[in-house]
Length: 385
Ligand code: FAD
Image (cartoon, rainbow, N blue to C red; front, side, top):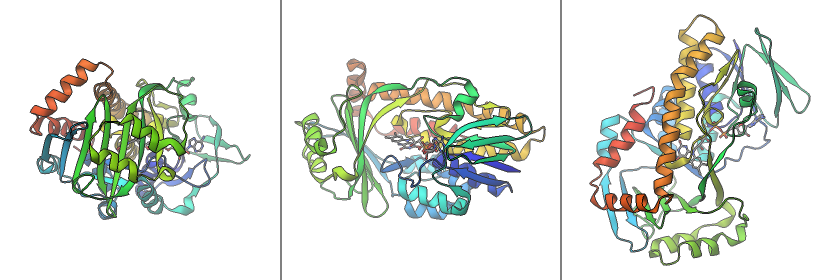
């Protein structure tokens, strides 16, 4: 069966690998000529890694993954540790280590595994037609392709979603701006095998190890949307937003390279349950656009890919039927995680300052078991347990 996938992000590539593994012919069309992932790195939690393992990438992802053994929250202003604990109990409970990874390295790993020769770069989908037997994709450059089904893995601004829903849902600004990048690991910033998060004033500064002796860092600051994005001012702006914060935070601001730092205004979309229509289905951010507050957007895209392949392989009542079954197996979980992330986002970023203060107080009483319970429940409710 010939499958057309729109978008060569984490979702489209994972789906491409999964569908090729069960014998389908797959072609991926990607609008950009050169893939430059938005964001420096990503934490792939154990549910996402299990999907990559299922796709045969166990050794490769372990090679690009950072070694995360512990987690700590630090009072951003005083520098005092609020809670710090081992992640060993989490890893033992869920049966797989999480790996923070460079986005560029993850992307390259997935592209190579899928097969570079089957990806058409610089080919933007502008229209599609489903005649009940075949789907035809039409591209901006005047070319077209036809397959038995089409998967829209075309991200948060999806065109395929418009075909499925008949309208483009509003993206909701989550109320904060995120700056992220990579710096060399240095214990003067944070312990090397630890995910360290400085919190205070509804802001957040986080460091986690990835391979190659690098920390993935990010800063979150509650701000209005639409402020100017001026690279030359990143350091002075962050210096101002974090005035009075502990020395490691200022050391990080001094060391970051503005030319390789990303600035993202964080959005999500109200969950919706229709992901399939005829021979066309959504996958990844086109189906569920979440804030990154529980680090599950990319992991869910990988889960979608695995469930889509299994559903197409194990159901024999036709493609339309299989795509609706895929939708029904995924949409409730995605809805739950998008709303969970939104709730966490509001508490972390001081939407209600009293709730945020209560969370800071709770962190000071935390021995790790409550946080591990929360992360484990995000992981264990996934399709691979
Ligand atoms: P995308 O990565 O957006 O890929 C879509 C692709 O489709 C793009 O390459 C695009 O160019 C292409 N495309 C779009 N339209 C067309 C068209 N018309 N024709 C052809 N091609 C098209 N997730 C985690 O799991 N863990 C994390 O720690 C994490 N951290 C995050 C931090 C931040 C700051 C942000 C913003 C997100 C984070 N996420 C995280 C979420 C994660 O990045 C996304 O969920 C994931 O990248 C979605 O992958 P995707 O393939 O669905 O979409």
